[in-house]
Length: 528
Image 1 (tube, rainbow, N blue to C red):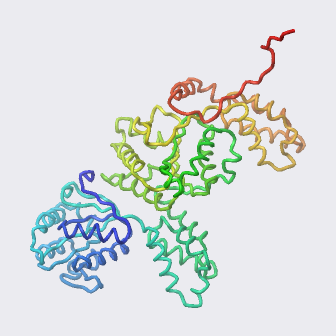
Image 2: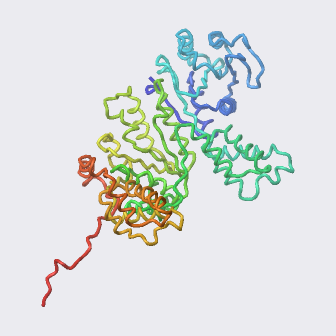
Image 3: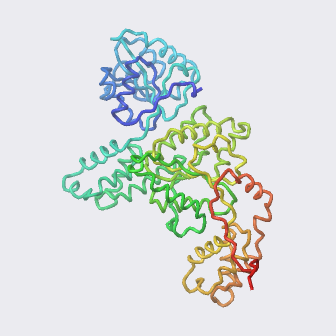
């Protein structure tokens, strides 16, 4: 089981050399490096091994054994069979590190697994001048249980900013001088490096190359960002375009939006120096259809940061341990991007297996563990906003103080908020059919106990009536008639909404201020 395997996390070049080099000096005979970036990892392994005076031998199931320069040595192509190569490692007396590219699928064969296990047990006791170690390169942490006490998993992170900067400079240096002079005008270099954070080394180089060939031989940061959206969207993260209206035009949630505006000031270095911790995130629970998802999009726009939606389902795998590795990979990508909003929509459904007796074989419980550990330990500027409709299905460990900075309950909109929802929705219509003469107060009163989406939904049917009636202007009566045709969720699911309100009382902060009662003077005794 991979949860029993020693695991290390390695970042950029200097820390890579220190950590992996130390493992080799400590005579760890079997390192299992997890990363899809084979070329980058091989290059780093060769550099690291040189610092601890180990020659490198590379193997794959097609080319056999070569030295670091690619020259065939030892069994050469005859060693394409993994059993032959493992036997060559066993019989060799040469001090060397063997980097095995394709061994991961072969270790499912009991014979290969046993040969590797025997080597991992025997090699640490070899004389110093005959010291040998094995590095297995694999995109996953799918290590057989038989190797659980012998292998050290090294989770290899994506390139940091220093490495991305080196890739950018190498791309520019490889251009003809007349092209390089104009490829990156003043100010573009830093923006282009920032835009590529979160990509693999090869993907970053490919993005820069694409910009050069499609943008008149120039690096354009927006092209890099667009390419990053495409690459990241295939890794369990979906890149969303935030709502451009931001928080200023968002209808309602005054308390929640005020809290978010204050949180926006807490990401700076000045805030760190003042003693403020980097904000972790917030949990929005409450009635469906009341704008929780819209608020997430508005926050990202207001803060001017990327919005990533996380899907735990995309991280699931049939292999033991691989789901957790995939989930860690998603969070690592989010951290590499820098400051961003990470949106977990309907988190109670995504982690439903964690509270249903492990109905999914424990995968959701494992994902929950990875998520909670990451939230506890991350030092990145990733702000997590999770939404939930049914809080009863959330695991208690997710709700305790210290996970999220704050938890807000989203109730049905007040009459003032319903009026604002109408105003915002009507503002998207052409001016000729706008809302200048509409009585929004009267319409909002007709939408009592409507969710936000139900309030917004009356506009299109009313507009259809006005269109059919001679393309006339929208009237107040049209909207009130449309409202009377709706049976709101507050009636069809009254028990469910009451249960949500009862749960939230004393557990979560309200997202809106209570509606003030208008004074009429009817209850005032006059001294006449």
